[in-house]
Length: 80
Image (cartoon, rainbow, N blue to C red; front, side, top):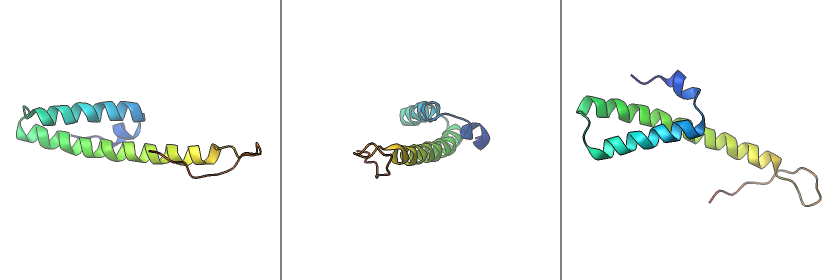
């Protein structure tokens, strides 16, 4: 069973690594159906967690961009 509380405590890197493992296992087609469903559910939670962490990081970057005059400024950050 997926534990959203444990996912909420994960770093972005840990969550992404687990998500990559889940994707690899699902793509292999070797897991039984019920296991695949559980993995997919956990993967969806991990994906949402990673997206939230990225959004938070983007906001932090936008807040710390330094303006040309040396004064802190806020500019939109561009992520490729």
